[in-house]
Image 1: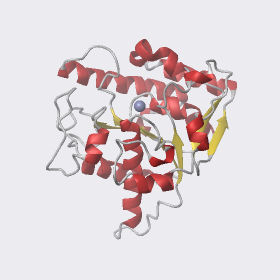
Image 2: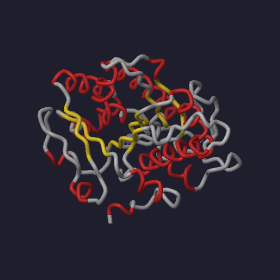
Image 3: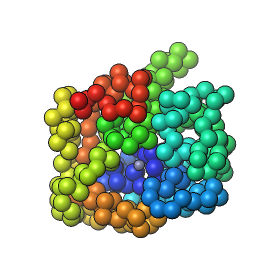
Length: 285
Ligand SMILES: [Zn+2]
C-alpha cells in the first residue's frame, strides 16, 4: 500500500489490508511523507512541524496495529508533505533539492527515514520506491488514483508507476519482471466534497464520483467489507487523533460498508504523468 500521508493507508485501504492479512498475504505499507504539512490549523514552527511528523508516524503505527499489521511492515520515507509534486516536476536531480517550507529541510530530518537524510528530490524518492519494490516484490499495489485532486496523491501515483516502469526496463535485473504481473488498484481520497455528498454512516455504500464513472476506460471494483472489518477500520482511523480534531466528519465519511478501487486508468496515467501532475488529468475533460 502506497500512502502519501498518514491516514491515507486507512482511508483508502483499511478494509483491504485486513482482508489480505486474514488470508495470510504479506502486507507492507509505505508512507511517502510524515504529514508534517498540517492541512488546516495554525502554522507551526519548524521544530514543531517535525514533532508533528513523528506524532503522525505513531498514529499510523497504532492504526495499522489495530488492523493487525506489525510495525516492521511499515516504511517511513520522510519526504515533504505537500511537496511531492515539486519533487516530481521541478526538483528531480540530487543537485537541486527542494526546501520544505514547513520544516526548512532539504533532506529528511527524521531519524527513522528509510534512507537516512534522504535528499528532497524526485530521484531519491524513486530510488527508495524501487528498493522497496525489489524487496517486497508485490503482486498487488494499492496506490492513489491518478485523478485524485491532491497534488501529493497524483504525484505518489506518478512516482510509483515510474519506479515500476524503471524496474521493468532495468537491464541489470531481468528476473524482476515486476510490471505486468503486478495488479494496480487505485484508491481515491480527494475529490471533495465527495464522498460526503453520498451521506454518512457505516451502512452506506461508497460509490465513485460521477465524473469518474463516466470517464472512459475506468473500471471500478467494490470490495464489500464485513461489519467487523468496517468497525476495525473506524477504530484504526480514530487512531489518527491529530487529524480527527480538524477533519472528523470528512475522514469518517470514508468508513462505509465497502471500499472502492479502480484498475483501468493507469495505462492512461503513464501517458499523462511525464508532462505534469499539477494540472487536471485529461481523463476528466
Ligand atoms: Zn493524503
